[in-house]
Image (cartoon, rainbow, N blue to C red; front, side):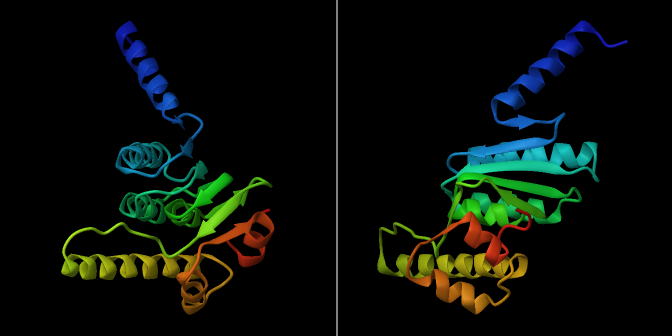
Length: 188
């Protein structure tokens, strides 16, 4: 029989998860706001917990984020692509920049009617010595190319060069209707 302390610890555990936009029992995660190291630690931990508890059951991720740190987003993308659970994404509000990469890692991707998506080549605020700029540029180009690979692989527009040309010089905002046409959204 469970001790009272164990029950309280479990309830406290669930409350802490819930306060961070995570419901382990219902298998959903809300991603709101900036993508950074702190937020992705919680997201990744929740995904692993859900996969461990029921490896074949879907996980629902609702995302409303302007994006953020691409390396943190890539940690989530890699985990989602390797996860045995079907990943159901629902975009709402805005899904931009690195949050778009996370969204594209979903197996099933839907969106609420007023959602806007932002695709772009990324940006950086490099300071320091000129050769540091060169290294940063190489790194950013590599990250951008990997994003274009992901978009080409998981959308209706399968040509990586198309994605690279489309996102190279300007931010591209698209509506839900355009996202459906492009295969960014898999179910409307």
